[in-house]
Image 1 (cartoon, rainbow, N blue to C red):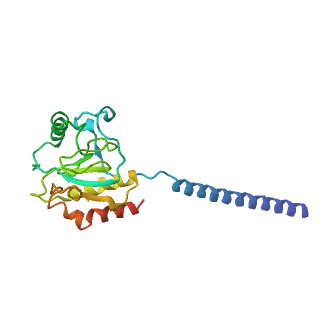
Image 2 (cartoon, rainbow, N blue to C red; image 1 turned 90 degrees about the horizontal axis):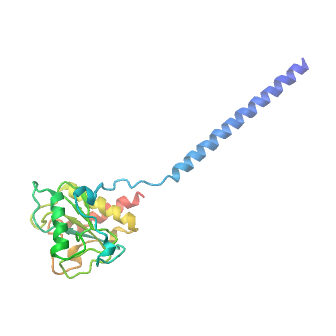
Length: 221
């Protein structure tokens, strides 16, 4: 009888150790999973889908073979197209024409802007952002990431899709180049020769709308 009791006791202790080990193993696995989640690379939530140069039918320029100046953006500068952009106008054809004019007539290396936004808030790739843009005014765009909203905002109001595209593009660039929302400004802040980005778009800079929205998204990082 005593032998039987000893065998039962040994089996009970063995089962208890197995349960303890199993629970400990599960806890260890749970910790590993949680830590793995903490180290998963962050996806750039809310970043705009960029229509590439190839997608809009442009020429991808080798900027190293041009007179363009390499730079690292330290400012985010907003422009408008300055000419009416009607609903029935093909934005991809417009970009192809702009690239041809920029290179052949103006003698620039490429489209002067780094990112371009159409009426529906689609964002198009322009000049390589690691090379300074160009301008018809007196300011030096070196160090500026240039974002242009197509249209003449002396005459029309920006629509919600365009405003969202500006915020998401600026946030994307701020993250990439480790910039704060304080470096957001408009073309006319650096040039006395222009009203760009127009009287209907510029107030979103002066009232702090773009800066606040970008700052809020950067805080989520």
